[in-house]
Image (cartoon, rainbow, N blue to C red):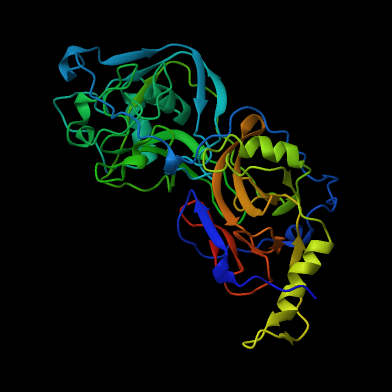
Length: 433
């Protein structure tokens, strides 16, 4: 039987993100499908074909320059209504962006919108008066109709906020806290004032339901003055009861024919699928990650079932205090858990897919999680490097457990196993027990 190098002799390097979160939730019989099995609808294992650059984790990106209130945009100095030309909007955000909720924000959804007109300020569109709040969405719609307009759709709101250059925040690449104090003085690239600055805003659009997760609700955009910086992003959506009448919710009116485009809600997918991707493809991806490009050596995957049996065998035969092998009871994976060394495509929540890969390079073993982006592009989410430990590493998953899978070089051995967790803040972390 194989012996195990003491865990204390192994150097572990955790890259990208922090501490672990809680396990996920259950889903129905669909999640009983084991990775790699053909599902009742005929779908097969995923076949990733990575394209282009692997994006850096948001936590490791250089801070963007702060947005600045645009000069020459004094409240009384511009038109009361802003003409927004027809054009393309890249709605939503990039998977892994700080503050992003994948169940609400689409992943870089491209839509063509027709031209429309939007009020420069929140209703009553008069910078000398405070915005009207405390009304339901139906009442807001009535007031816009009385003013000769209509409530804006949420995609119209997002285009007006992102401006012609598609900036993440109204007026720039980063949030300027000064805009929360003087929202009327902060304008988007199109010249619309106060978008996402100090109040949430009703839109005419609905958030489509997600089974067992999200009921149908009104789509609200923007953020309150006290919200965290990332909540002021133009892409941020909230699902709110349309009959609510909060003092933190205002609205603005649009004019012209409404755009029919809408945001579809993502749905639950199979929790885990085998991903048919080769070691060379993974090597090319790792070479694009600054923290991992120096792995060196040829990337290879572990063998199945031999290396899975090795991981279980290490748990059965452990070193006794005297150094002699000590026989242990039979060790197996928990019920409903599958052990594999194959790459997995993981769907922890609707709207999010994560490619989890384990392998080795010379004497170093690794686990890497990549967020899947549109166009088969990827972004590093988290990684764990076992320096001086060639593995093997096995992954353990249960289709009923949405937000967590396990990893081990010695199954369930302290210091030699851990979890890959999708946290409540929508971050992926790889941790050691």
